[in-house]
Image (cartoon, rainbow, N blue to C red; front, side):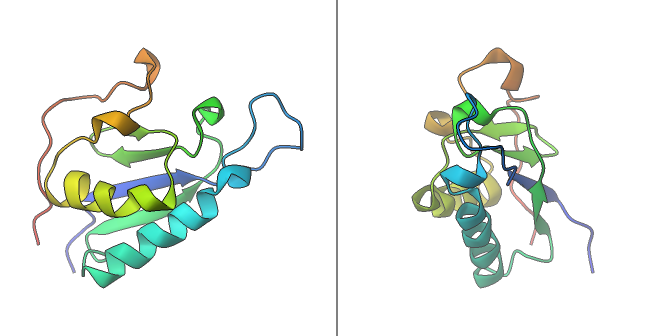
Length: 119
């Protein structure tokens, strides 16, 4: 079995109710993570792309947050409805979904050169 080419870390951190930053779990991150895992399996990508739970990624104020490595692509405000586009465009075709990028320089992608996964 080949090693993983990508890792998708989805924040499922939970903060106490009323925390000013909110938390990704409360905003639906577990459902996003489950949909990612289902889509990867359905497309036969699970052996080369790993979806992982992550603790706090320190970007709670940007909504459900995930980061894709090795490129360091940080997406925020992710909804279940965005998952297929993320898989199609970023994972399969090596493109960035600009509207989902976190609008903060701290989370800017490490590189603008992305590669498609090799099946």
